[in-house]
Amino acid sequence: MHESINEQQCIWKSGLVLSKDETKAEVIEYYGKREIKIRVSGRHKRDLMTIVTHELDKIHDSYQRLKYNKLIPCNCVTCKDSQEPHFYKLENLRNRLAKQKYDVECDLSLD
Image 1 (cartoon, rainbow, N blue to C red):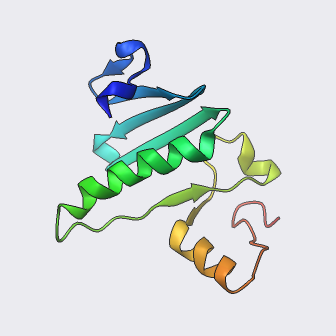
Image 2: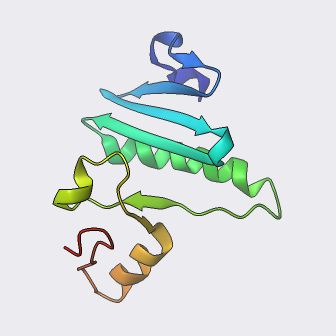
């Protein structure tokens, strides 16, 4: 995705900022924690997030035994502005949607 690097200069050792269609995504690797965090802002957040996660999936799929979880932060009042929100596994949220279970309780705030 090198062509989408913001102003072709927003890149550093452990991350970068991508820019596409009035939307920006910050992608940072936390090597010691074995995490990659993505933050998206702008008009077309979902579109850019889909592109970034698709590219990460292609990288992950090239390693046969690699196991990983996609985590989605909670958006309750307590977690929304927290530096350490509760996270849900994406596969669990998708399973709930398929079963038409639209309410999920936060483990931190119990909301």
